[in-house]
Image 1 (cartoon, one colour):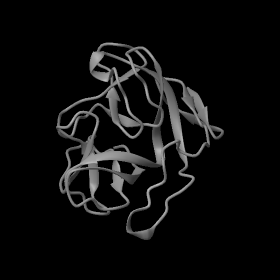
Image 2: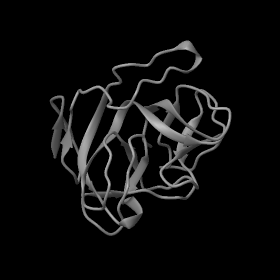
Image 3: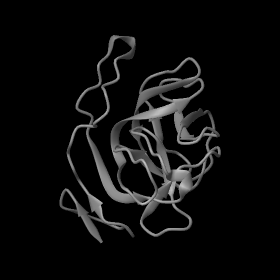
Image 4: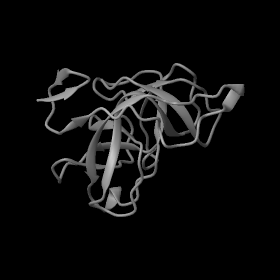
Length: 160
């Protein structure tokens, strides 16, 4: 059991509450600036070669081979979704901070509607919008829209 803001959190990993602003640039689309994004995070390490380079805003999943580690996946709606990287890595085994609650900037691929559920996509490390989602695959809700292609948008993490 770990504590986040004085509350017990059932977790197999050490939970930390940084209270820091996200290190990525603020989202400024549609004339709106989302600054000082607040989030709760966990400190882990990047896992396999698939997670070798993790960028800020990448969607990460629980590693299936290494304890207390994360990987990236290129599959729609993975049930292993864990959160969004708020620090970057350049090789496997490096520390990475992963936001698990709050508002963060997330890398997306394709058309996304504001308010749409986000989950893992077929593009490595990116989220996609889904009208219907399977149980335990939701990363969060999009707080801005994306017309098409790759982009970074704010997301309210609501892992379930």
